[in-house]
Amino acid sequence: MLGYFRRHRAVASLFQGALLAALMTLFLAWPLYRSWISANFLTFVMSERLRTTQLFIEFAGSWALWSAILYWRGGAGAKIYAFFLFFEFAPAFLCHAPSGLYEYACLCLFPACWTLLACMLSQRFAGAKRLFGALLTALLAAGVAQYIVYFVYIVRYGRRLGSNTLMTVLGTNLVEARSFLLDQFGLLPTAASLGLFVLLAAVLRSLIRRCRPVKSLWCAAATLCFCVALALSCRAKATSYSNLFFDFQKGYRQYQTALDSLEKARSDPQRRIEDLKISRTGRGEVCVVVVGESASPRHMQRWGYRRPTTPWLCSSDAAVQEALIVLERAYSCMVHTESAVTLALSQFSNYDPRVLLHFDHRDSSFMFTGIMKAFSLLEILAGAGVRTHWFSNQEKIGAYNNLVSALSRDAGEQEFIEDLPLLDRKNGHQDEELLPLLRRALQRAKDGESHAIFLHLRGSHWSYRNSAPENWPWLPRVKGSKLLSRELRERIDAYDRSLTYTDDLLRQITEILAQSKFAVSSMVYFSDHGEDVTGVGHNFDAFKPVMAEIPVVLWLSPEYRRRYAATTAQLRANSGRIFTSDLICPLVLGLMHVQHANAVPERQLTSEKYAVNEQNARFWEGRLLRSLVPDL
Image (cartoon, rainbow, N blue to C red; front, top):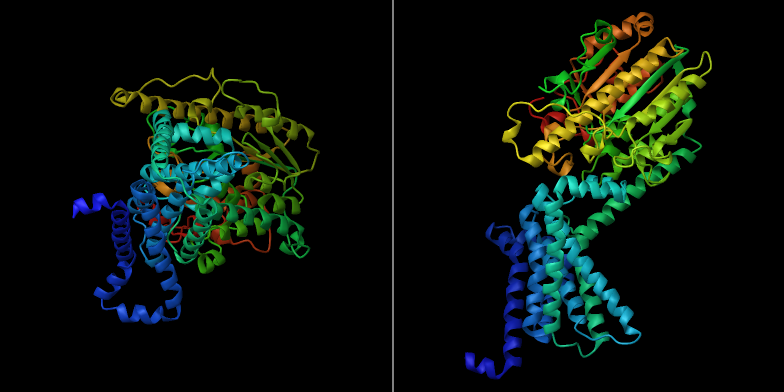
């Protein structure tokens, strides 16, 4: 029989195609078989009765398509298909993707699309068709690249790209993306991924050269279009199937929805700040809100860390300690900057009844839409007659294509120091460059005015080594550090050094406030999220409790403590209770004694009715915090 097949290669190829197509048909029919053995086959058939014709077309089309690939292309076509099939199934297996009828169809049909595209490249393109060939090559390269990115990400984080991560990526820039790759994956894994891409591209090119050129390019293109339509038809019904292209499409749609919501909300005539019935009791006051970055209490001496990373917070000066109120059990509302900061500075929160009742975890645009439609902290303060300022050492990335930048447009004065001359060419702009802007705002303030000044720090952002000036001192090594690998030791040293820089910056801010014309002054410092320094940094797709733990520090001037003794006492009484960063907005309003119609005392740390505890504390999308942080 083997001899017969050797003499009649066309028959052998047809037999091989039919056999493998039959196996694929059985594979696609596995959900039906599984339903049958669980005694639910009849129910399944009845529920699908109205779609019998459509199912027949899709399965018959899949079978015919598979047979055509293997028959027309011979062995090389089968190898190319196996190449793409592996990169479809490997991620699905690694992240334990739910299986279903249409999920199986997608896993087999999309590799068929890439295979047909590869087979078309076996044709030699001449003249005007070269541009078409270059386009096909670019599409195929993008397909290989997206499989590698997906595969490497799942190996690294244990799950596929989530919409929250993708929305964060869409809000960053090339510099931060490069830092993310090098810091989170390392230079060697990143280089290995690029090397893998080159290797796989070379293997694929070798297989394509072995394919016989297609006789009719138009016929092949029509077959490809049919295959893509078939795959997209199944994709529309596959609830759990995805790839990098679809994930980015979903993330971009959600991101754009959030930005559109902001523009519509700001231009809506029915959205009136007057409806909040805002009132304020204080005059001639200033509050500085310092938004930190990636600071972890586990690396701060004030929270029990063994290295002196917070000398100012741990100062033995009685006057300093009397002015400080440190929240011992503070958690971020999300582990990505855009989500955490925009929610913290918005009237919207994870405790909103709409989040608990209507949220769909498959569509994170609900959260961002809610944030953008709600009044921001900056708007409420401005409505109370408070002058607002936003000074940032983070990337602006345009006025509209970054959610934090878009929200900061509500400030009366806005300035990003990336627009200023660069003082430290090696490490970039440093947070201390915000201090002259703070002094300027305080000096220009008129008597009787109240001001809220927001300072958005670079903090302990990637790369840790660049998060402090080049001449900033390093901490001495501690016992046992030699047991760590060199890379990990240097990583921890750089991170701890950045925290000492932030601690000193907070000291300077309070000294500037103490020397200003404002006798009644306060400062609120909080980090946008925590950091898994020895692991993956911060990523919701690989969540760890350390990523949600954050420092929150309050500083109150002597005159503030005298004038608002009851508020000060209540803050000290609540300092040991659980606090989440999406409650920063009511906290700042409480510090500045701004009242409005939608205030909820149970969510305001300055209130004696504050009621957030281990049982009801919430995280992003209304999740119970204790479900993510067991040792709450």
